[in-house]
Length: 525
Image (cartoon, rainbow, N blue to C red; front, top):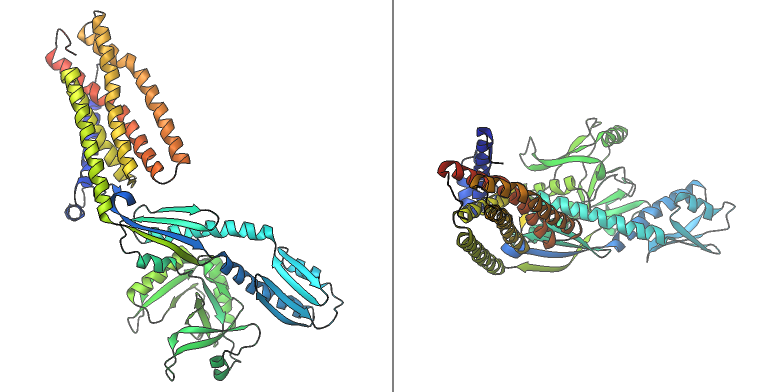
């Protein structure tokens, strides 16, 4: 226990210095960190919502809108089945969570069986010639769960792509999402990103519908009148398009989208690329419809409707329009993150001002300083020089904890500060066990060297057991806790591991180095 080869001394000292260097950026301002040379570490500990302020949003998934969309899609499928089997019908429409239609006359075909085969999730009720279809409860319950999980994932992607550090995203109940973004004082841009479903689809236009009918909103079955993103030169009103309801290609097959620039005009455009399946389908569609307009619809608005000049085989293309650099970046981000399965409504919005964060930081720093000062005083009074060794190891422990928090990009909250203060106490607690064991060995008449060696050796088992049990508790808190409880668990776990390193190696190295230098006849502890 008292022998340290040169390589081990260099490794321990080098590790401590490295952690100190990585902890320094956390004490510097953002401007100072940016001015540091590139070869120096720049990562600092991220402060949580309670320390630096930020925004709190409560979002609600509009499942009713999702249900309406699924019913509209089902209407097209029902229409196709009835026409395919030459069954006359009237009044086919969707509304109030159901689809209704009536047969013109009795049919020899089993309509119920045809509809069940079309979609097993539909409940079919018949009253004479009248039919009512609705999605069953099992489908609705499973869909609610799936839509909420997809929304959570996509919200996480969108928020993280904005460069925000460590947002807190949690589900609340069966249709709400809590979003907390530290350091964001103006959430308008984030709200705009989250408020768009970003559902992109590709459709052919119905060229049989005339300009006057489009303006009046008259369209045959299977065709929708959709407002465009551009304007009519004659009326200066937004253009309208007669778009075939059938989705030729979905934006779900996109694998990349980014801002680019038009080679002729220099205006910002959004370049997109499909996966292999999407590229193949895109090539087939464009090859079969050369000379026809092809509408790109985003969130129920026609972004652009270019004419297909030639087959597009490569699986990539561009979306042009009246984009600015910011709007093209936003659209690219939305397309990369994926479409929300249902719209999100902002139910509640709160901002935490910087004054609350400053008060919390001041109180936490004050408590930490007082606690550390009392611990340092206690160790010096009770153990003298050996107490100073323990205090140095404790400071090394604090630097190691901060540097690891910065490297792991963990968020430090007020409970996290409490975790750091607690690990500081545990760091010296390990040394107290060692020193008390040394005192015992001296009282038993052992020499200073033997007392030091037995003190570290015999106390190690107790120290290891206490640290492992605390680490297990921290892991349980992290696994089952939420929000700030997890922050406390992270700092506690990191601090415990660092404490074991400093107590077993750093303190021992200092004590052994002093013994070999002074060679004392007695041990004053």
